[in-house]
Length: 144
Image (cartoon, rainbow, N blue to C red; front, side):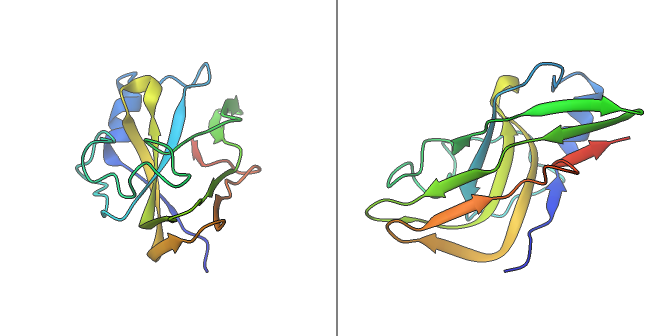
């Protein structure tokens, strides 16, 4: 499978300019799975009560995985967000289907940041894993 490209939400850039996301101290970020196509132009918050496919069950936690290793740094006028990889592991009953992986900020009222499109729906069977391999060198995104 090809590496999915990160797409930022328009609202993320708008919220950054208004102070809606604070990366000076590590925020609590989550990664959610869904089979509902995101809309980069109009989506503003992740709502765990509207189409949060898959349901919280079988190894998938409500709202998705809470991310670790969240570090924002600025060097030479360029901000970079680095996040540790995260793994979803299915238990009996499996997880899915899902196609999109949504990154959002629970420290900022679930405001969306960006998403990955896996190009096709995925369903995990019992013991299957799905890893989001964040780029440790270049970060999830940079702002210059």
